Image 1 (cartoon, rainbow, N blue to C red):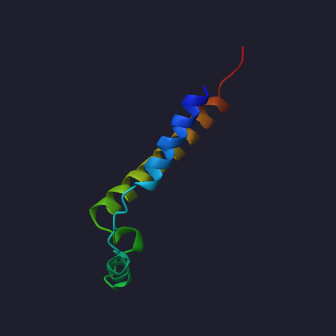
Image 2 (cartoon, rainbow, N blue to C red; image 1 turned 135 degrees about the vertical axis):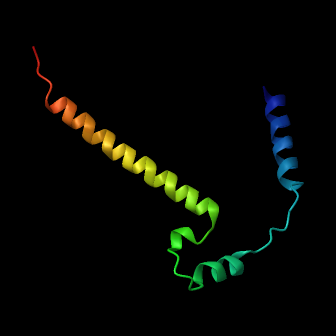
Image 3 (cartoon, rainbow, N blue to C red; image 1 turned 180 degrees about the horizontal axis):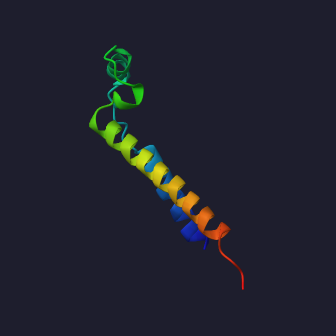
Amino acid sequence: VYLSFQGLRQISRRTISTASRRQIENRVPEKQKLFQEDNDLPVHLKGGLMDALLYRVTMGLSVFGKANTKAFMLWYSFQHVN
């Protein structure tokens, strides 16, 4: 048990100390320019196709969920217990 614990400690040290540091490109100024330009689009659609798709799926699920909830409430409010 002690050997496995020590081996685990060595592996964790090694993976943390030898982790490669990749440089991530800073794209914040590009995104700021995109979202701040005045093109008469709502902010939730300025991101392009993926934003539009995400918005439509979210709204569809919300409308479906609300309609389903109302249908179940109506269904159970009119059921009679024998």
